[in-house]
Each structure stands twice: as C-alpha cells, then as structure tokens.
Image (cartoon, protein in one colour):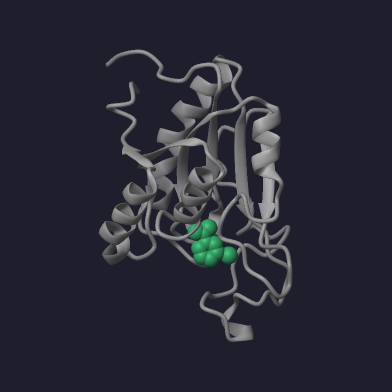
Length: 193
Ligand code: VGL
Ligand code: ZN
C-alpha cells in the first residue's frame, strides 16, 4: 500500500506524548521517545489533508490522588505547567492542533482522553468517524482512550509502531482486549506510511 490512508472523516489522536513518559521523565516508558518521529509523519499527513489533529495531555494538579504521595499507583508526574507535563520538544505540533487536558480533578484520575473532556461531542461536530491513535502509554492511557473511542462509535485504528507500554508483560493482554472491543491494530507501514 502506498500513499496516505487518511481521508475526509478521519482525525489523528496523539495521546500523552509528554516528557514525563519519555526516558528522563518521572514515569518513563521504555523507548517512549521512539513514537515521536512516527507520529510526526502522521501529524504531517493529517495537516496536509486538513484533518483534525488532537493531542491529549495528562495534566495533574499538585497532590493528585494518583500520586504515591497520596497512596496512589504512580510517582508524581505531569504536574500542570511543569517540564514533565510539556509535550515532547520534537513533536511537531501544528498551530491548529487541539489540546485536550485530562486528570485535572484532585480526587479522580482519568486515563482516557474522552473522560470528562467533551472530546467525543467535539469530534462528532467535526464529522469525524474514524480515529488513528498513537502515543503513551500503550497499556494505560492509549488503551483506555482506544476502548472509549470504540464505545463512542468511532472506527478506531491503533498504530502499534506509534505507541509503547509501561508494562511490556501486559501488552498481549491489552491487545486481546482491544481486538475484542473492535479496535483495529495496525502499523504505519501497512496503513500506508
Ligand atoms: C498515564 C500513568 C499515569 C498515561 C497517565 O498517560 O499512560 N499513565 N498517568
Ligand atoms: Zn497520570
């Protein structure tokens, strides 16, 4: 397959490609930064075709309930306005990209970019029917975002070469759950890039 496979009705959703999820960050994903060049190609394709590009970010207040300091499962990460919460500096973000922040409630975590953000309604208003998805982390926020995308009725393609897991041993189980939910697993290569 050659050429772009993005078309009218498509959008690109880039999940949490933030410093804290890359090597050197507070909650690093192995090889997390490797998703950046792959996603940059997709961002370029979407922008060229005038299709929506959405970037979600984990955006926690200080003292968030998910932090170890509060008895939560994660080290302090993606604190609002910190270096760790910033998008990876090599991510080529178009001016018109839409940013979606999540996890900002003190007492409640949000793994999905759809959780409490209004994203599904916004996509529907833009006549989006199909989503191409990548980012970090594959087994946490990308996973929950992909499941929610299906729940909201979007055709959902997860780009496996544009995502990396925190826990590699959970990857197969995650893939199974996604397939059962109807998420299409592919790579940029077979998708035309
Ligand atoms: C994430 C752990 C905690 C993610 C967010 O973006 O995958 N993982 N908060
Ligand atoms: Zn978080």
